[in-house]
Length: 497
Image (tube, rainbow, N blue to C red; front, side, top):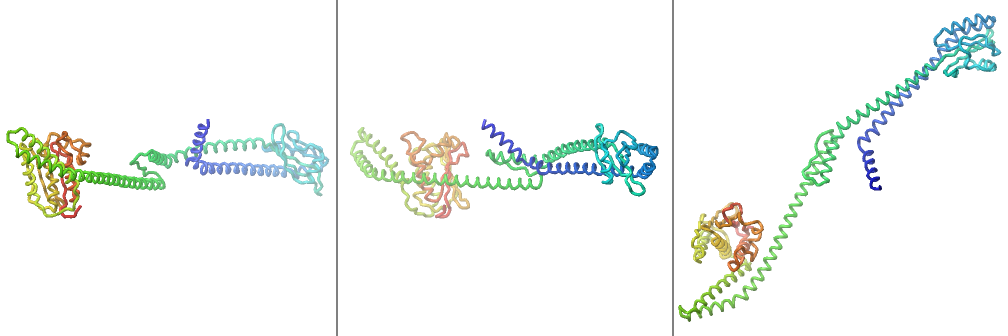
C-alpha cells in the first residue's frame, strides 16, 4: 500500500510539475480569470447603468404630469387627475401610477394596487424627504417605484405621485446575459486550453519528449545517442549543448579506456619482464651447475670410445652417450643465451653474409636435406651484436627448416627507419593454422608445440630477448594462411628503440 501511494504521489508530482501544467497554471489560468473578471465587471456596470437610465426615465415620466396633477388636486378635480394617470399608463415602461393626498389617502390609480405605499404616514415621510426611488416585489414580479411630492403654487405639499415600472424583464435579460457570458467564458476556456495544449505539444512538448527520451537512453548506458537539434531556439541550444557534452564525455571515456589498455599492456609487459628475469637467473644457475659435469662426461665418453674397437657394441653405446651429451650441452648453451643480458658489442654486420652463413650451418646439421632455402635481399649493413643477432636468426631458421615441407623463405629489406627481416616456411600448419591462444604463448620460455624430447621451447624466447636488447621486436604474421611467418624489426641506427 505504501509503495502504491508513493508511486501515485510521484506520478501526481511529476504531472503537476510538468512544463505543460506550469503553462496552464501560470499563463492560461490567470488569463482566463482576467477575462472572466472583465466580463463580470462589464455585466455589473451594464446593469448599473441600465438601472440608472431606467430610474431617469421613470423620473422624467413622473415630472411630465406633476404640474397638471398638482393643479387638479388643488382644484379637487379627481376626473382630471384620473385622466392624467390614464394617459401616463399608456406608456409601455409604466407598470402603475398612483396619486395620494397630503393625508395619504388614495386619490386616483391606474394599474394594479400600489406595491410600495402601505401606510398613510409614509406619504408625509416621503414628501419631507423629497423624491425617492425604491425596489419592491409585487406578486412575484420585481418593480421599481419613483415617488414625487406634489405642491401648490405656494409650495405647500398637497399630495404624492407614485410611478412604478416592472423591472422583471430587465432582470431576466441581465440574468440571461450573465448565463450567456458564463457559457461563452467556458467555451473560450475550452478553446484557449485546447489551443495552448496543442500549441505547446507542437512547438515545445514533442521536442522536450525527444530530449527526455535521449536522456533516458543515456541513463540506460546507450552509446552514440544524440539529441535532435530541432524546435525553438532555446531547445535547440540545449540539444547542441547536450550533444557537445556527450561528445566530450565519449572522448574522455575513449581516452580513459586507451590509458587503461596502455596501463594493462605495461603491467603485462612488466610481469613478463620480471618473469623472464627470474627464469633467466634460474637458467643461468642451472646451466652453470650442469656445464662442468657435462664437459667431464663428454670428455671421458670420447676417450672411452677411442679405446674400443670399431665393432665393439660398447663403442656404439659410447657414441649414443656422446650424442645425448651434446644435446644436453645444446640445451645448456640455449639457457645461457637466454640468461645472458650483457651489453651489446655493436658493429656493422653484413646481413646478407650472416644469413648465408647461418643457412649453411643449419644445412650442415643434416636435418633438412629436402628443404630449399630462398634468400631474397640486397647486401645490407646493420648495427648489431653479430653473436646475439646470429643466435636469434639461427633459431628462427632452424625452427623453419624443421617445420617446412619443402621451402624456407628468408627476405630482408631496408625501410626508412628500420630493417625488416622475414623468415617464412610452408609447414603443414601455416600461419592460419596457429590458433590465437598458441600464438600468444609462442615466445614464452619452455613453451613448445614439438613432441616431448624434440624441443626445449627456448629458441623463440632467445630470439625475442636478442631483438629486445637491440631495440627491435619480433612478431608472428598470421596474414598468410599458407605460411608460418616471423617478422623481425631492427632499428637502422644504434641505440634506437
